[in-house]
Length: 467
Image 1 (cartoon, one colour):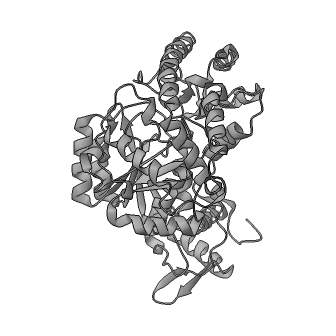
Image 2 (cartoon, one colour):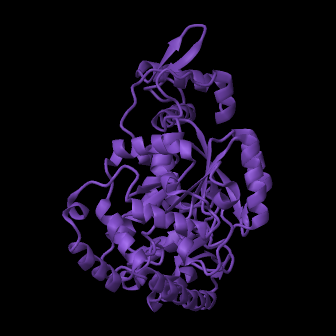
């Protein structure tokens, strides 16, 4: 018997689990102040416990002031919102498979740390010479280019150039439909602020870029994953998710999917857009890997005409992560609202970065850089695929381009355990469950072929897999 509770230890554990689940929902903002809690019977079924256990848990939460009881009506959230902690949202993960941890380890890593799990190119692969020339050119520009805020929409000549570039992919957008941002991440953040209310449901691919999970949790969204196939999301399961969850948004990469390297097929794209139109779904198409392609893949925004699809991009992956410049192409009637939000959250934006990107795009150095980079990545893809195959690690698909290989480990090997072993050897890996909302990718690793040239990576992997 537990002297403090008057109930046995097993019951105390179950009561604690119910209380923890309610606190978690409050922390995640799926239960906000004044919201009604699930009924005792329904929550008992959800938690697979007795109704008496839920009654005890609710009474304790009332006693501590977290919720309050309304006789004849039910229980309601009464506590004020605590400051958001992303670590408290969703189940706590092992550090090695926490996406925020993967990012922080990669960003904090010193020169001795190998980073085959990171999501960007090595510094030596970036156009350092072109950047320096552009900086010298910009140093001779007028004072405003060096010191002033940018205009609300962003640098007009760059928006005009971006409109022409999107036209090459069949996306018709006037410069006035384009808003410059400081990154692709800020573009998604602005769109989430513009479109979502706490508790709205958002569909993501499973697996998908792990920062989508973190960003959507920061916006208090309900996240639902849809399995991804080599040609796009599983359409039947996508349709079921639309019916069951009535999501507000779907966020995806249509070209060179992260982490799988897959490419959206035209058939899947058309079926996806038909479902979106029937259900009133808005799609955010993250196209930051566009310039890695040898042959352009279908773009949802091209088929849709920027009606239900919002198109975003940036130059962080291809040009410089230090030069923060991205963009949003959206329906015309969204632009004023997005611009107001941009001013509220970042004021004028980064004019200097926009001027630098424009200089590189205009002088031809970016085009030459990308031609060489695509060839270099193709060679690295072949090399890394062969070296992984030699130790029993096989790719899910052979990507048409890009930097990512989504690879399956031999049966019975846990990617998180391999990552822990590698970390001790100063190698940062990206285990599959960091990308999987359902956490069903424990046998996968994402490799960045541009960051995987060191033989020590494969030696450590082989040793770790032998146990």
